[in-house]
Image 1 (tube, rainbow, N blue to C red):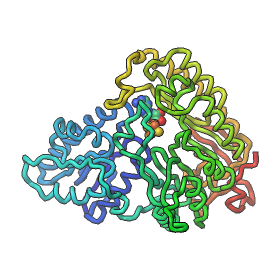
Image 2: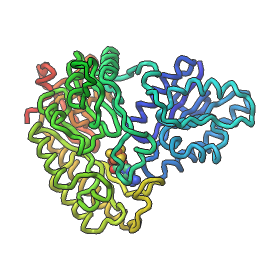
Image 3: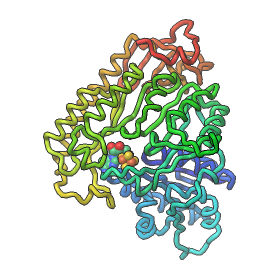
Image 4: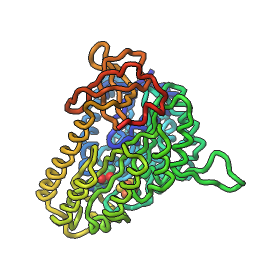
Amino acid sequence: MKRLFIKTYGCQMNEYDSARMADALAPLGYAPAETPEGADMVILNTCHIREKAAEKVFSELGRLRAEKRRREAAGEGMVIAVAGCVAQAEGAEILRRAPFVDIVLGPQTYHRLPEMVARATRAADPDRRGLVDTDFPVESKFDHLPAANASGIGAFLTVQEGCDRFCTFCVVPYTRGAEASRPAADVIAEARRLVGQGVREITLLGQNVNAYHGAAPHRVGGGPAEWGLGRLVRALAEIEGLSRLRYMTSHPRDMDEALIAAHRDEPKLMPFLHLPVQSGSDRMLEAMNRRHGAADYRRLVDRLRAARSDLALSSDFIVGFPGETDADFEATLALVAEVGFASAFSFKYSPRPGTPAALLERQVPEAAKDARLARLQALLREQQQGFNAAMLGRRLPVLFDRPGRYEGQLVGRSPYLQPVHVAAPDALIGQVAMVEIRDLKTNSLGGALVAGAAATASQQERLSA
Ligand code: 5AD
Ligand code: SF4
């Protein structure tokens, strides 16, 4: 058995991709390893979304070179592969700066990984250059990969990749390519398989997941009926044994009526939505090419909350986008104060090579970005703490997914992804039970099982408040 170590940077989609690469290499005899030491193969699955990602990869590669040398001195090999978005964006640069890398492959070609590994391990020539594959092939990798396997109660499932929105700060349309949706039939089959393996919660993934437009499992009336995400969610919710559905990340402009209706009607769809707004200033939103204003976002949130009153929101924010003034930034704070977020990610703008915003004049000085980020994060933290504190005394449906740190304790997730620690029997792993929230920890909640809380999924998932 050979040992495979994968280090994953960045988003959940990379986590999903890493798992699929491991599945693809299993038939070659590779089994997962916990550390790069002693591994026969190492994959760095990289992220290019923000600054320093590439530098982190190069410093990790430096460490791996030492390990590779050690192994080679002992007569053993080590295949080093760089995958993901840095590989896509900087493949040639990687091989120039780190010629000991054997394989560079982009996010759309990892179904070809077994073949590349076979070639890399066959070629003993020390002068051999690394293999690079950063195509955007016509065929879909999903048609060539082995079926996904589950290892826990929650699983990710990529339904859509790439993006056509071209926000001016973002590398995704360049590294992941054009928007493409998987056929609904394939997604449903994968979900069924995961549920058969014990998965109870599925998070549908896509760079712009609510732009999903997969083809229908059966052509209705002969035409290629397209499915939006709302319809996909409804179809997946019918899978018996599946308790919860989530999806991320969404663009406000792609939030259609059918998806909002799914939030209203489908109890398995969790009332927690990651809906990045980036900024509260119309001027900035325009410069970012977001194609919506702050008022559109507020209206959308109102519609969502009208559909599902217990819906909570999270968001991404960028401070210090080129040209952002104090007034623009104040507009962001005002939007946050008005909407109220259960959690959020906020970042300083970082110019990404090849994106339009990187070329804009009036880049904001680092010190101003730091000051704005600190203020925004203070407000967001306050909102998050308030949101968590509001859970005290409430009853929440918790999906238990693992044993806790102490004997007789389990950890699960609330509908809002808050970890909840509860004294509960192991038999509840994989089940949803009602929990009364009794204490508040820094990053989690504590509670007690509500006696006789057995209920149907739909009763459990509807919050009472
Ligand atoms: N600079 C800072 N943050 C960025 N993001 C994407 N590109 C950049 C950039 N160039 C943030 C956005 C996005 C999240 C995934 O990362 O907020 O929603
Ligand atoms: Fe990037 Fe998201 Fe904008 Fe697409 S919608 S360009 S992935 S920020």
